Image (cartoon, rainbow, N blue to C red; front, side, top):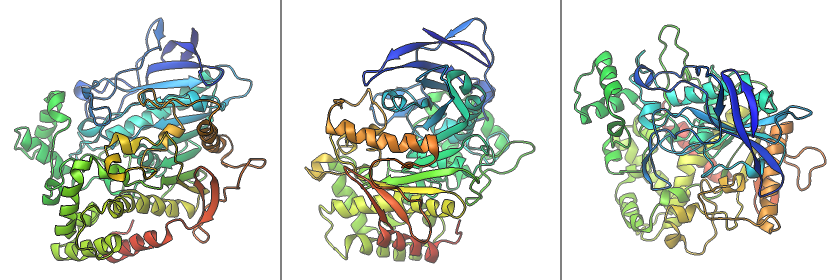
Length: 533
């Protein structure tokens, strides 16, 4: 048993023996905000209320209400879900410890801060405090009416409130509030990149690691969010377009009618069910004294924040999906060039321009093939470039204009690369080793859900420890390979030299990764986008 005093009262956690060496103190299910229920649904979070006596912190708080796509467990969670977890090597260290604040992925649709995926055992061994959080998801976290009642981005404001709570309380867990690194993967990585430009987060963290996601990834921006909300309302039986009527209607809806609702607003979306993220981050309009999380400025990166950013070698593998889906996807790709047009451009371009652009992209990735039967490798490459890599490197370029940036490409291949199996793609890819989107997570976290145990004396664990050392060195020093580190020096990224580190089974320093493909997407943006961010 271990107790810690926080702003709201006394917490009782527990001391956990770490199967990978040593022990740590665990505090689970700490409320960082009031439950966002009733009149607080869709609103920015309110600070938590104090409690009397001792609050037990030995069980996770409820997940955000969701249909869990990864565990296939159906609907789980609750609307009362704004909880975080703190794992610390020592509540009273000689010197305050660096803090690593994790934001989970899941497409803004599913996920949580629990140890089913994000166990802290590997990271705390390296002398850092680890914080994991829940935040509101899907409609509950990202519905937007462009109105004062529902301005949008509630889920990201939850993340900000969690950061504010950590800033105020983490010293009591042995953490240094002046040395917080926020990091996250996929939607978590995109969230981290938004925090780098949000006026609400200035001064709340010192360093940031967006993994496999950025503000420029097409799924990380909502397009025509009010039209999406109106489509949802109509589907649920409300045909008003009055904001106050809509707000009262949505506020009174039972949870099960709001979550996992299929609401396409483009014909191309209707042709691709299950592959789009409908509720995401919006540019907020100004209403009175309301704090806006994102005002539309993609370029005002917080100064004096160090950034480590990157992507995996085969990001697009996650888009391949089950083997049974591949023939249909390739048939659509063959017959309808618009399939290849990024969503941001689909909302801007007339049909003839979409056809022109789609053919150009198809030609680049499929090299003039007419019969696309079985052409899964070019499809993976396209998904990776369009959904992830182009947007990630574009954001790195924006940041590098005034911030210290380290760019990586993650290529590790061991038994911990499990995502291809999880999404059902291995019958297609066969024995070809690949590093999918999200495969990096198991190199940082101890997943209780994935049956992938690792022997502390194995080569895999040694590789993981080297990867974790990069992440924790960055959190400690702002440099992943400080003086005295083993292996190649990771040189800071610049617009001129484009230095990066390939993080594979061996670490290799290089320059300008995937240069030809990135130049292709850069040219597409310059030629076809009306608004250059």
